[in-house]
Image 1 (cartoon, rainbow, N blue to C red):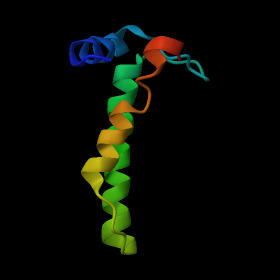
Image 2 (image 1 turned 45 degrees about the horizontal axis):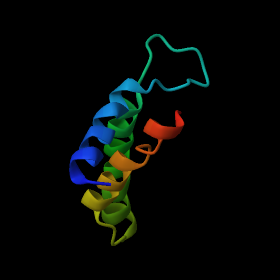
Image 3 (image 1 turned 90 degrees about the vertical axis):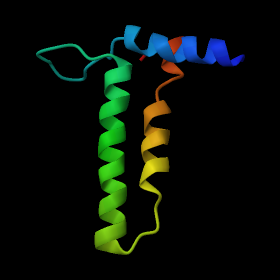
Length: 77
């Protein structure tokens, strides 16, 4: 995939609505979801390192979390 196509692909994440398992007040798209997952993943990596002697790279964990649902642009949620 060319770089320009890749970024166009990522830009479509905001167009894919998530299917909530429970009733929600507002809908959420996969872009919003991925950002929230990245925040939580980063925090958990920091906690692992500081409280449990881990050796995890929080920035890498957050980056992986940001991209974790990018394939759903093609498959849906």
